[in-house]
Image 1 (cartoon, rainbow, N blue to C red):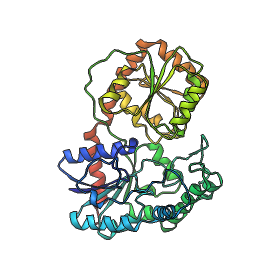
Image 2 (tube, helix red, strand yellow):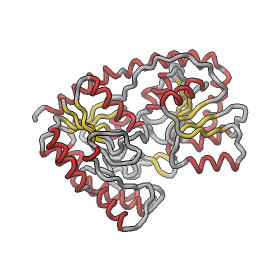
Image 3 (spheres, one colour):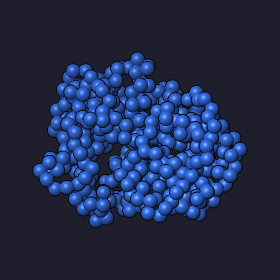
Image 4 (cartoon, helix red, strand yellow):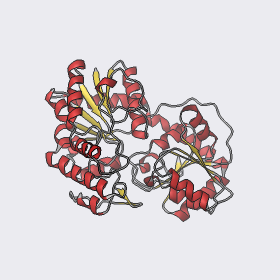
Length: 404
């Protein structure tokens, strides 16, 4: 089968992009031809289809200029993306399209082209952008659902995007435009939700329930060489406001006898480093971005992993990666995390700062317990087997292709 695999980034920015590349490998391993469509970037992995990618646009810093106005128009509807996807379709004649994150840089302009060529569309929903202008159902350090019942103007009034009226206005207008034409609801055949929580949330906000299916992410089971644990706990992931690092660091400030290592990059890095430096917090160390075997060794050598997310996590690939290396996870009791972790069996939850501090101390002092539960967590990985995911995905593809 020829499959168009579409995502705005052709390099790894976060868990959604990692899943995108893992899915490509899984499909190719089963003999399918996977054709990527994405955006140009100096960070991109090489691709023979790069000539069809849309030009790069940087939306990280909102400002007013002619270039910004061009980018704004592209957020709503990209004629370039429409033109290039048509050329790629004519060349390769794919049988199905699997889209991931296309908002802003690609836009839903491509969906009508796919439909016109009778190509079924499956979409993996990696965040809340279908119902929330800022992707997260989270603003100003708290969970937010003010935009429910299409009150997207709340995004502008509350400066929910980059704490900027300009960026928030753009996202507000974009939501009203896309909802007015119902691009996603009309053209996407099936929405894949990585968690039951996500499916329930989309249903509650009005997406057609008949088009929603639940299929958790997958992960390949690691065959690891045991490494000696060191005296530190670990956070790894994107350093952004919704990840709850401000809470974790404030708790670690009161636990000077326990060391925390933080792996990752993101918009909050400088702010968090300044806080640690100004408050002379000597037990928190930033390691920067790590990947591959280097990251795996850092995870393996940790006592346990902390996932202090402040937002309602869609799923939590970090948890699976930790389980895969035999690590207990201490996580906030939010969103899809509750479907992966079994309290006291494969990990633990906390609901406030006091409980987080207490459980960090308890787990740190009971290495035998964390190792025992870590071994149990590692066996949990079998529930997320790539082959099981593949079989279920093929059923979804087949269902989407009915009627074409």
